[in-house]
Length: 612
Image (cartoon, rainbow, N blue to C red; front, side):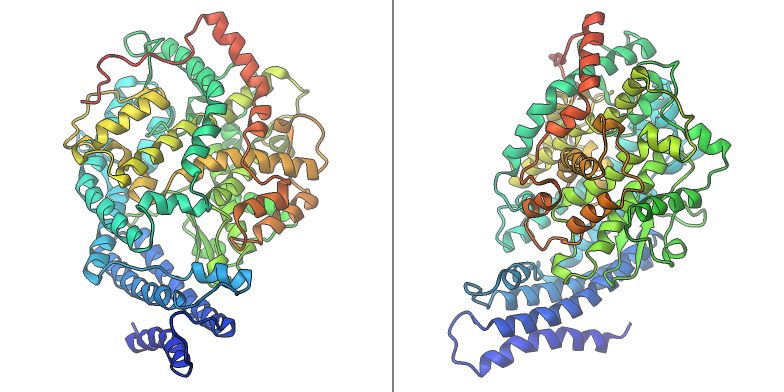
């Protein structure tokens, strides 16, 4: 490590403003825009180098969970934090009143004030300890131990043994949640303290301000209220099918759903319920995993097909080094974090994906999603560092999910040889729409609660010893899901047993992305001259759609997100109408089916909610 180099780097930026100020008779803020631009140019160059080094350190740690790599992350993070603190202080010396828009906006993105060095070290350690617990935890039975990926994930995707599923759910949530809980208390305290140093009310307020509005909380609640009737219909239908599978001793036809039976380990995505809840089981499957295996698909081929999808739209291919530098499958010689993520190394040429992929349709869709992130990163790579991000976090996620939507259509699967060409069949359409709803609509209240609960934590509205109880109370009311076994509040903290919470990521991005992905899809399908229902649109090979999408992505975060949205859709607000139109045939079918079965829409909350 060349420490002299970094001392010179840190010194160079912070010598600029004081030197010039010393030659001017300026009291208070400096209003020289030329000086501000010089400051920003140097910051962009130097901070990009620091960001690249930090990304390298994080990559090395998360693809090889060792104490040595963690120590490097800690050391680099301390330097980045110190640099950002000083840069932010100097940026605040400018009077931006008469500056051009770009100069003002970029100055607001310069660094941030940080905690004192000991607190920075403590927060960094807490973050990597939580990451390591999540990434390396195993659950054991009869001297055999199982990782989240692939063993537990496969179990939760395929098992209909309620006892087996309960064992996996309980062992994972208690093993991870109880280990992380004391760390999470420290994390909340330190992140709140740092957020307040930077003028936010708390850390949740800092997250919400990424949307450049004080009204995000009420906005997402209003959006969800419009989708809630559809979700309740899906919930009632799924409950009936789970009742038929597991029986009355496990499923109450008027109550909430047990968390261990709704899809994946967290009940986030219900896609894996497809075989249980498929409306027309004798019709063509919309999950071509068996066809992929029969055709000898490999993980590499899946990524190459994903890359080809973007190229077919006239978008950028991944760099030549992508396949050699990425981690596409789980290594067998070390512990890693498996959660699929796209990495931008901030040098304009190194883009990677970390994933423990296997040959399945679920991972095929995830690959297209992650490559959507990579495409977005490549499209805005030419911008200054402060603009190298999505218009908001939901945009980044929506671009990825948008591609998965198109790839999942029967039209696309037929075009790539993963489904036989069949005549239009309304029953196959309902199967398809159900599968899509299980991956999108059912996740909306889940993502909403994950963050409304954390916002309340950051505001200090929930006593520490009631964090878990409050989470399940909100989850039961909004999602209609309950813990399958009693929880021990002083010990348990179930919501941190998911990657995003333990890894310091907000999840409202996934709520907003689900709304926006349908708006983006509607726009791209119109641009590509699609005729017919939105759920049959595939913009594969449409360079017109690719050109429009690239125009929006290349803006990065240089403009407020409504400007970026307007560039593609002509709209400046999030709207649920495209989503509701997409799922209208399914919604109408569900209303008839649930009425035919006499099913309750909604759920009764039992007197004892099992949270204590």
